[in-house]
Length: 247
Image (cartoon, rainbow, N blue to C red; front, side):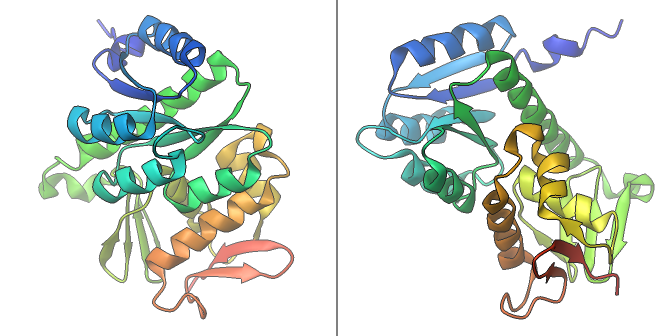
């Protein structure tokens, strides 16, 4: 009866953006084999156009693109489509570009050369979270009494709806930013090291990429703090890591 698994994703549309046709062909073949619909773009202009007209459920975005570079594409798409997961594809020597991609609102990045199995797993995970958000946004407020929430000081996280409120205002976070905040809010007042956040939120292959954590925390602060120069919710323990104030 429960024929969910892969068929759950049959109608999900993925926009693949890369100027290297062999990479696009490999991704298209493997994603279609998993039951996804795919749209392909080979330059930045096409990417922006397809993102806005095709309304994909997820975007795989290369950084090095003709006409309009991937970082600019990310920024423009994120400005219009705030919730679509964007996964950056980048070469190992493009560290600065990966960091900039996160600053511009990308949810995740995958380093080339990548394992197709790992990429498909990341796609599924991000689509799953996005799907939960969309479903729960349609739930009537009458069902709200059973929601799974974390309340810490001025911060409230609804884990069922993937929704965050600061001082009562709904905050628009990417899925990765939500996961960081969720992990910290789950243990208020406890300092969590950058290495632990990398391991628990990003996964083992990000180990050592400390700036990824710092960039993500900075973006979260810009959204939840009244004054980022004097944060009251998400606090830095210099030289160690971060914590959420318990009061």
